[in-house]
Length: 156
Image (tube, rainbow, N blue to C red):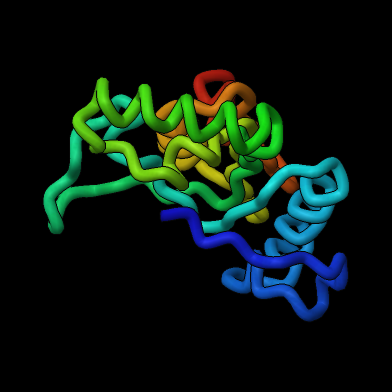
């Protein structure tokens, strides 16, 4: 189930982006605020549900956690009566495997934030995590890119 927070647009009182250093928190809060001001729901430390195309991981298996995701609220877009019909149809097709909130909130944009000089391996892992979200738009936000060993073969 998606854990949504009410938003008063006072980012200092919000716990979204509360992990990491101050710059990391600032970036996440800014991205969150942009989404909220445009009518999107925001969730941090989000993991894609298994029914979105993935396989349900066992307790000891890796599950990607995305720094921040903007979610579309399907119920608000199509209206409650139409959403109820949609939920009924999907529930019958999937034998009620998709919870109501799982159908209601669809990932629209996903963000991974790296505020240090990330290695190419870190970026590669972030890209794979973003793919797992099945969101329409995926962003890798990098504060600063060093050489990441690009052109290392030219150095002598």
